[in-house]
Figure 1 (spheres, helix red, strand yellow):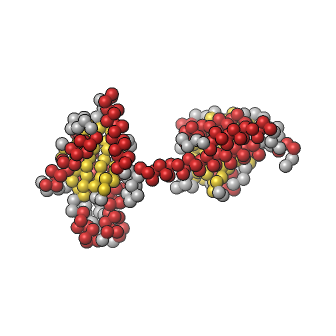
Figure 2 (tube, rainbow, N blue to C red):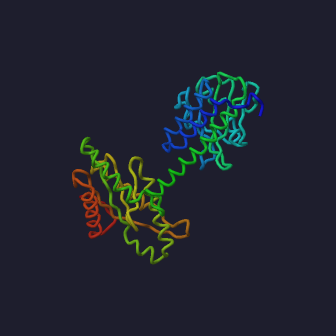
Figure 3 (tube, helix red, strand yellow):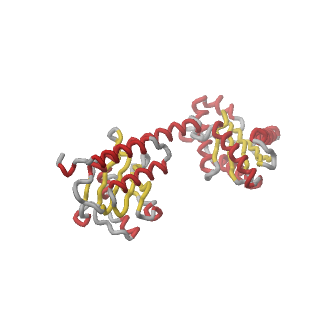
Length: 338
């Protein structure tokens, strides 16, 4: 390593502090903020960016920026190999472009959107076990003496460990609150959120409603097509639910062929309309079609609203459950409120 590439005692101490700060943080916003804060302290510049690689689409997106309006770059996507960041992500090698005017692969999209003028860029990949997680960009650094890449590369190494830790934490958390078969939330999450909503309603007086839903005559599907196809049908009904819901509303796999929908801020009439929407969508859908069957499914829906129908979570669920069973007794495939 040349003398100008060697890290000073201060640099090494800063890197150690950075490692401690990053590898102990699991909250995404705080983690990403710490990464760019430390980078800005180590390498003063006009702006800094953290881009992460979307695992599903394989493109880079801005996760956090300092020195620019994030809203202006929120929707920017860079393909692997596109621009300096894309090239660094693809080749997994850091780059220091002192003059972007002489760089034939520099992408001008961000400058065009923001009016910013990029002159020079330092960009390093965030890599964990040979897999690119993202890149860190330092734009128009104020001090170009020496080679900033070794220091920024160490920062990126710590960031890679931190980002991977955060992702694994998210995966574990997701497994703890989601149903394995449907991908919907599970009952553990349901009771926790309902308790929170009830407590919040005590001070805000905002209502919320739940829909208790049971697929009609589902045993016939299992008897006709088998348990595996029955499980597939449950997954497809869960997909129908997701298509009908917009956050903060969410669906819960309550068990077997039963589901619960939680509707934050919905009064009874709004909840009834949402239940009718789900019922209509189910009637329009052909299930197990990709498995060479044409199965039509129906469901019975019971609705209860807090605090109109109950003032505690257990009573609220019981009220919606009773309304659903009233539908079952009177012909199924309908919506009833408490």
